[in-house]
Length: 135
Length: 166
Image 1: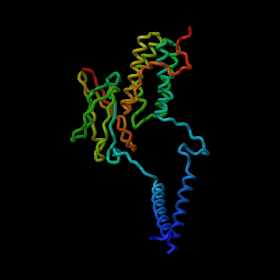
Image 2 (image 1 turned 180 degrees about the vertical axis):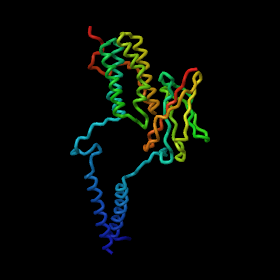
Image 3 (image 1 turned 60 degrees about the vertical axis):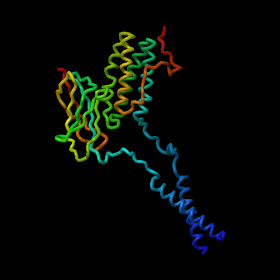
């Protein structure tokens, strides 16, 4: 049988423990939720661009290959707006070794122009424009 | 025996007061009423809702009513809205907004301009459909395909007359 004073003491201890736990969490900034798929730390820049014809019009549904020299690559297609997007390769891949090419039946690739250099902001993709010419 | 108990109670009270006072000092989640007014810097979603969507709607309603002066005015306003949005947010999620806007809407805006000047309803309808498709294509490119724009089937502006003046 515990005395009333002991009971009060235990309660006070419990309150102290809970209060400390809550205040520590609040002090630490509360519960933080990082994006599960936020792996930008490990990835290099992503790749983005337009495929255009010689008149400057964008070309939807063109095949775009974004490859790393001697290591294969990724094949995608341009969307309705004539753009393609490829997520970043590993950080060990030097963006200078990444090459973009484009293709579509009835066209041949005329030129590929890199419009931007790697940025310090990993959210900004490397832009490369590919121009197709009708054959 | 009573010493540790009293010390525990005093500790609990001190921590509770600290937590409570911190809470009362916290600002409203909507900001500090005594702060200096912040510059208004609307981001892409707000710009689309303020400058683009209502103008797209009004342009469609004006063309549908064959109110060509109003359609011409709304086309100019819509074009300016795109320019303002692209200047205010030149990159969105890392993507180049001016280039995306150009690819999505430049051609249909030009065709709309011709249709309005010619007062040619059929060409207006086709170009307006093209503009609306361009909006949705851009939404898809920017991972917002769930924002689907359509040709308005009713007016959301009950205080504005869209029919031309007789």
